[in-house]
Image (tube, rainbow, N blue to C red; front, side, top):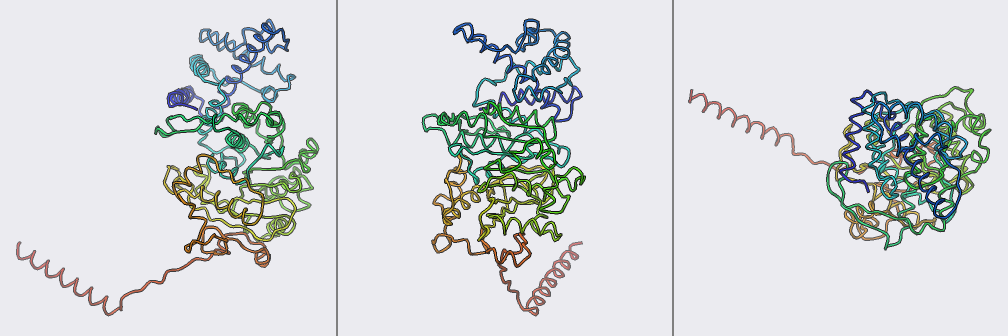
Length: 546
């Protein structure tokens, strides 16, 4: 668990980067990632050296005899100018020489470059990295998440960081499970928020009661709160699958990929499968034929909304299904291709996908409703991605294959934060209600459900609804989600088809208008005259006093 003191150190280093002229948040995180990677290489080398010395187990050295000065433990004790020269001219060349090692991070380090030119800034960064508890699995994931939380500007190509609490709610709705040997993918993974938080969810679910620990720490706002630490000790039987084949991500931003790989490793995934690739291009099918064709059980995504693409770059198999250059439509088609039969997805889309009237929009929605199982449409408030973007969005949940009978709609009005650019915490939060209601609906519909809600949302749910009263109507009868005046309701497929597959929630939600009663106009006029008379009388009294 990351403490307030550790956060203060990171905050101070962040400020030092800005003062030193490095103001791009992605660059700051990237440079910190390089130094973390350098220390992790050195730590692993030391462990292997000790194992070789004690047990006689040989290993392939990461540092040759002439490269010993490039180890973190060595250059961390140098003077400022000598440290800068060693790191710039030696350490980064060493990174590039490790490509043959097969490590996912070493692969992404081939284009690594030191952006720090101020020797004192480098010393400050190295000293901070030296103090980080990156040898503690429970802490290093939180540490990296805190670094990523400092991404306060949108990236290129429509990329922006999905709020962690929204990611977590989507994951709890989809319930990834290593016991089923599921393969999870994000086709536009960015910093791997969906993948790393999926691992956290799994670790929490697979922790025995004796290995759940509590700790009081300071949160991002400086407030003390109790947080749980989950050891994930029950993952032993699935460890190899989790480490090598459960988590897959693709992106065409090399900086993002370096950060994504480090994020997953810091969370505890030893060998995440992260690749440099535009998943909408023809090259994706050529380079990753198995992944592009029914390769995954679960896809979680918030793909970039870039508008349109160069037609020559688009995989023709995508446009054969939906004739368009709009990325938000093409990503849904690609996700369907990537899913195994019976595989499922939760994907964030701009709300224009739900009601757009173009032929491509209608084709896509028809594809989801008529040829697959569209399970849910979750309407998100327009401010949920501020300050990055104000675009109105929704979450689509669907399964490849099967048949749509009813679509479950949910109107999410609050996510626990203000919907302005400041995004300050507020009491109103529909996410616990969303997850619980979704699981209740699936149970009623005899669909698979694990009924696991993580610690944080379950605690919030208990505070909001101590007796699960949200699952019953005013008469105490179990909700059947037929009442369209409620926050959650279902709509039959036939009705959706009759509306040209329009999926906007306002098309189907019923609004109850409360009749207002007003006094007779003559009575109102009488009151106004009486009020006017009182005012004139007061003015006359005031005049007499002058």
